[in-house]
Image (cartoon, rainbow, N blue to C red; front, top):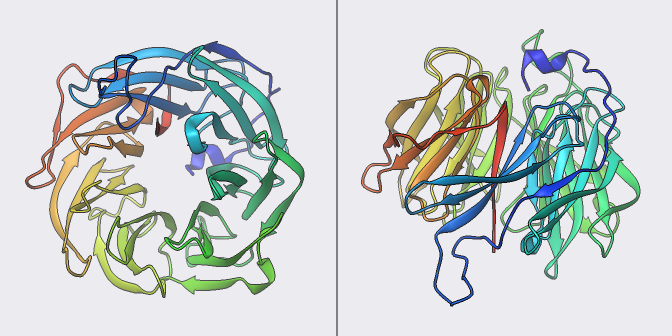
Length: 387
């Protein structure tokens, strides 16, 4: 969450909207003849007024990096972060407004008719939701969760059989502060994810230098908030996003303020290594992802020396060593790696551009793909739709 968005944003009416968008997509979608296609469906969330297109849909070819715009959706104020439901029939987006107008939004996605339709907007009960995730069981999405930056809270809605939030939400409010009097004067929940065994919900709290750990119990409430424990991190760290290794028992946590990457054990959640991603003290580290083959970790840095830090992963321990640095356009926020690992797409908010990089399978280095930039207003989040 940036200082600009810490200011109160004007309330905006949320209206339904639909447009031509989408076709069958995924990691390896099959066409009518049975051949395998390398074309993925790609969603982009952004900062936008509700009257303008905030979610865009593209076809992206993960073989040649060619993109084609297919459509978009208006009607949501600041749909900055997205997640895709199981099977791709539902999309969920935050409405990252500062106060009571903040929302969790349910969007029906009809690939056959190429249509996105906003079907529900529900209050989060916490300002500026900046991340959204889903809980699933028995092949069905059961809950939608938002991390609310200004609310210092997490909101959990149970989902009905139609995929829409139903009933009143559970709002879990955190308390405390951190070492930085300006940026950590109160809790700032930034990200919600589950441990690889799905037994615990983790909420990173930039404001208190903690990971809140909530046991998963199922039912409408999903977690036992009364049994919450905390993992305490270094003072002034500002924990932000986590990504898990696909096969090793470790995860990788990026700190926004101190610019560190922490290697954490997936069972104990203890920190086993800390290594610098931001070496210039920009205090704006953003996103983190493990390559699909589990060999490299990438972390974005903003505000100074904007770019992507590259780390090689020790395949025995999961520990990291520096492997390089790729400068990007200003303010690289969320980024995504194609399922085949060949390309990285970086959302550079301040240039209205998604930059496309080829990923070297040999050393993890990145190289800009000429002519492949995707131009979209104030991009924040990139999500591929799985088959």
